[in-house]
Image (tube, rainbow, N blue to C red):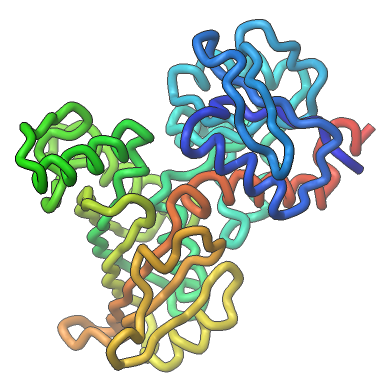
Length: 342
């Protein structure tokens, strides 16, 4: 059965990627509508070999669709997602607006697919933060084998996670350094070109940023509330692709060889782990890929039952658009959309 789909925020980085992935994965779509704010009405976006003109979010009739992929920011989602859900369509939301709401499942299909059945309280399913999504894909099979107690993660997050304007700022500053232009700083708190910034989202009272808090809170909700996690989230001058250096402490013994074998068999993961030059994956190589790549798997002798690994993924894909489409595929396969259930 084909679904009638609307993509809200279709002119943004993630919205465009959602349209691309729907077509790449041959998602059964009877019709697809690109929606945006009034100022973007008429802007053209690509859907496979077709061109869609954006329609006005404010005037669109959501009673005519089954599925809405929402990527227009938290404030828009707070206003619109419950209204859309009340009309019967399922909203898969990419913002932080609903992730920690107890009425809304927070889903990564490779990790907690059964959680999706709780969608019907508001007809909303939440997508996790981009850095959380790739992390829990890597943690899940290892947790099943040896039970994770504690995770220490440092992220190296690309500027695309902050939107198109952030990507433009990295490009403009990089060019400006070479031609001796004044550096314009609008999207980041410090220069991003040829620099790293240990600050993503707002600071909280305990000194952590909201991005770091999200990683801990979302991992607990998705995977296991008993897992302790501390994160340091850093913005780096990379256009697309988030990287993470992950240190894991387990309750039970597990070797690097065991972990490597487990991860090779796990869904959504590609292990590239050779102890030689180029025997690992970097952000440049993960762009456009569906998988979460794992490298540098090794034992940590400083703690009992410890492992360290390197985790890389295309944040616009697994961290956002791909995960949303995978949730839709999961719900379609389980017959959870209203026309399938009728």
